Length: 79
Image 1 (cartoon, rainbow, N blue to C red):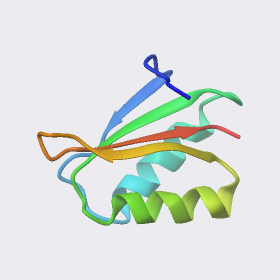
Image 2: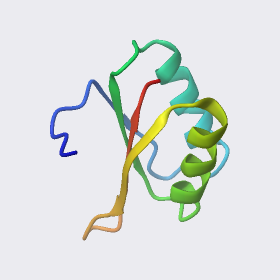
Image 3: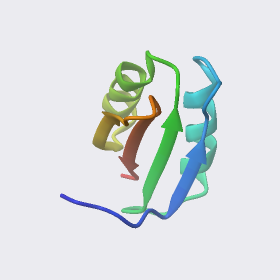
Image 4: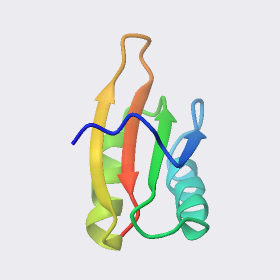
């Protein structure tokens, strides 16, 4: 699945756990089912944190990768 257009982009760079998860939770609460949330993070634990978050909440972890600039890009699809 290659999604290049996101419904919401959330920049949580510079924030450490639990702030990225809390900000994502707030953003997802305002979104509709099937919409996608792109997160830009720098917290090294973000990929594992969001994998666990998605397992617990039923949202879908679409992608998680570290870009060349060191920013971690995580894409979550609203359940």
